[in-house]
Image: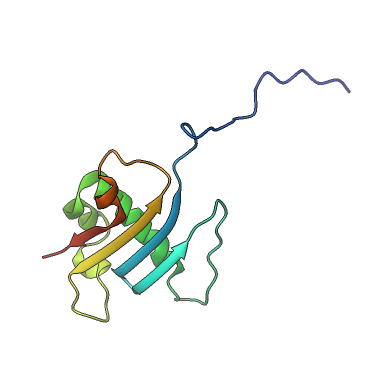
Length: 121
């Protein structure tokens, strides 16, 4: 059986056009996560027992996205308020992120991008 020739080309990324990618994420004080340090690859699989923090890790990334795009107050509101995002096991009022990327941010300088802290009062 004959098929039509493909007119699409494989997508090739060079150093200037490769998609943004998080290389490493360190989170402190988000929901059940007291501290975690995760190195990411193009395919990263999160494994763990029930209630070990897999979903909270992904939710923490969504919180970071919202905090950078909309501001901390709006991100806290979108994610259920301070009591929903702060650790339940302490009286902390700070969520701290350190991320390593291979892209530049329109929102933060490289130094700020390395350490983003959301403070709830």
